[in-house]
Length: 358
Image 1: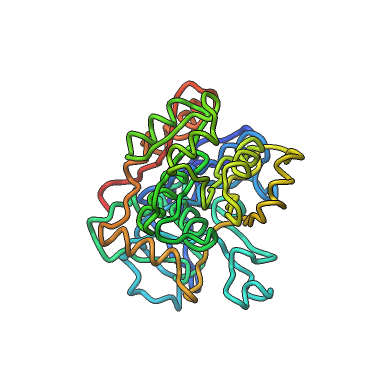
Image 2: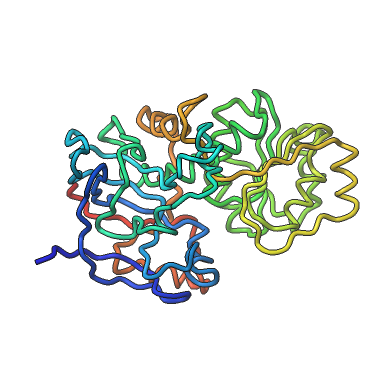
């Protein structure tokens, strides 16, 4: 008789529920992981309620920000992985295209993905293609919840430390005071930013940023350029991190960055984006650099951002567990996500937390 587990699965757009499914059996290089924690990404909301899964594949277990413990391996996978705990890079590259061959797996032309194209971490167990995807924690005190935040932490790190031209003393402006915005601010602080100012359109998000030690303003109730100059000693920003996906924030970024400054565009677009004529002119006149951000870097050359992030967590130098606003078991996950979607609950980061006895 098959052993069963709980999993939160999509059957069609708008239909997301917990059901009983067989525990997968690892074959070949595969690892079977008992989920310790799995975060709800901002992309999960439109996936559940608007867009569906990437290839309209159903039923599908969602969840790509997860951690856990290896409990079984296939043959000939290394049994030494059994009992190891860590986090898992969810992108499954083709390893054949030019991007993969150069180690830029996030740019793969024919990738698969745990949690949006294959079954992911909103379950008691998840099947991982191979140990290549695993980044082991070396510190037993690093929690599963912290490790489940590695994926968004790496997106923030990739944008702030690799793609922004970040340097010690830089003045950094961050649009979006959600979890990735706060993590970007923390990376900037670790890298020696001179000043950091966060921007949001919700007073509760402004208060959240201030609670976590960062100056913040509501762009709907102030002259933003004036606020930026006040925060940065009369100067505009060297770097802007646009984490909202809204055209208004992109236009504000353009206006608030100095000549030769850089804007990193992180937020998935909320709709069609229009750049105002005046702001378009500023891109040219100020010779701005606009860099798109997609995922994170998992190659060891020049540095594997995932391994670096886990190492920083293990050493106690980077934290993000305090950004979790709600925790739930699997049974409560669909209802909590629906509450957030319908604005019955304010949320920064929802985390499904697995069995504590791992």
